[in-house]
Image (cartoon, rainbow, N blue to C red; front, side, top):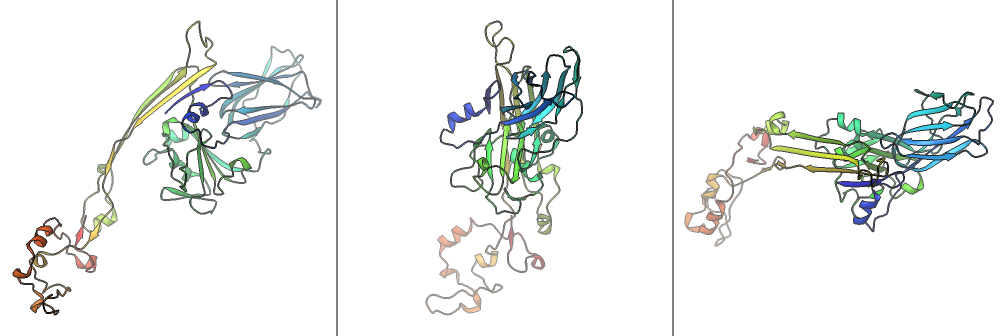
Length: 387
């Protein structure tokens, strides 16, 4: 996966849109809003509010309306700092504001303190933000959590099952009690569910390329109403002002596993189940010294590539194959009663004479495996071959 991201409002839609021109997108950008007042509770219309991206240091500014309110729209998911400045008041700084995909985030009321603008009041901790802008119920799994989780197969969609109200059913999910297949999945706002499919996606997003997975479970807004059973929003990572890279290797092998109960029951060893996952990524600014993007605030890239050679076997197979006696035409110990086609009656003693056996049929029998399971207490006589 590769994504180039201009600053501020433009996200990976640009590249994904080139290859999914007929897809219908959903916004992953959100908004941050708040109110600024002086100690008496009056609005401060002259105040300037700056939104700063923690990773890229990209800045956006706005002013207050007559009621002291401000809002930043079309803000990509990420971590931000809000800075409020006004003449005659100390600067007010709110760091570590985390905005998730499509979130409408209201901030607590900001009360400026009288003082010199060179002084700064920093809010290091605050009460939990109460969502008042929408009634949606959602949960977010960020990249740090995914790094710490042991996910079998290392697929980004696997973390959906960790969300309250979601129940995994094979490779599909029930959300809030609704039927399977009623879940929509987007990557950077682009729908990735195959046309005509209930759940199958037409692209794979690696876990190490995902910044967050947000699951809307109920009461979400109309723009996410394509399906009734929840909406999964995956947001990919973006480059920052500094270069960062990663290489990792994950190994899954049956030698680390215990045998299954079913295999132990019929005396079969551990099934082959192997995955060797190699992944690497690099991200940073796109710039030419003294010519383009000198401040490293305009264009960023992130590249992730993954190799996942895997091998395994099919589930436990139980069947019935001809015994050595039956292959020779002797059915005296079998429940099968072969019929003589010339008389329409069973062969005497349930034994077919060798002269009546077609040599082509015997040749074909060589391609069938020999019985390898004789414990009738387990099989109840329903099979004699397991694999």
